[in-house]
Amino acid sequence: MFGVRDSGFAIRLFGLVLVIAGYFGPWVGHKTAALTVTGPELSEFAKLFPQVQGGVVPVIRALFLTPLVAAAILLGLLANQLINRQISKSTNRQIGKSTNRQISKSTNRQISKSTNRLPRTFLTLVAALFALAALPPYQYLLAPEYRGHLVLAAGGLLLVLLTPFAGRLPRRARSVLTALLALAGAVPALWQFVLLHPLVVALYDEPLGLGWGLVVCVVGFALVLISGFLQLATSGQQSAVG
Image (cartoon, rainbow, N blue to C red; front, side):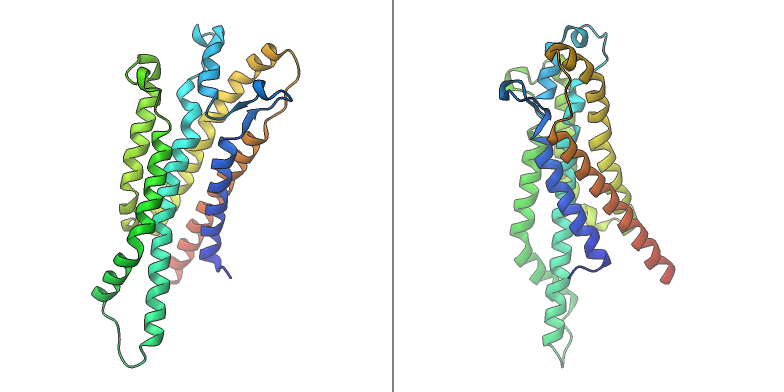
């Protein structure tokens, strides 16, 4: 069973799964598969509209990638939080077995490093791949129109590589960081979608609802945001008790 602290972790994990699944699902839904547009495709899809190319509708195409980059950073944070939880559990087991002696801190560090290096490295690499997925096509890597894509991908990759050091931050700071990443992942992409949606409706010449991918992605970010507030509240209670 999850405790109050573990509930925040479980909510964040489930929310992140929804974010990734929703982002790669349809944001522009249509009965014809060829007219369905997923989250990753929106950046290129927006380029087809003369209103966007001419600046009449101020769509910033790179901002459609913010859910992917934010999810990458959140996955890195989540991976390292999972490691901390595993370390805590393994330490408790060792203490339970050792009735006549205490295990030194240095021994615990050696155990945790040897048993948790592989999953930490694997999940961090997966997060890095998500960040790299925001890169523009190779032939357009340095093209001015893809500069935003490059900046987002490079910044996301850098932050993913820094997530192992997030454990040194206070619990309250990690909670705020989680909430800010959830907002940074959802709000810019939603803003761009609201600007683009009327153009898509006019192009298809029929009413269009929201794709299930968009809905699932937003729900996922909402859960991550809630988990951040939950963690912030519990850390505040612990500080008050302390």
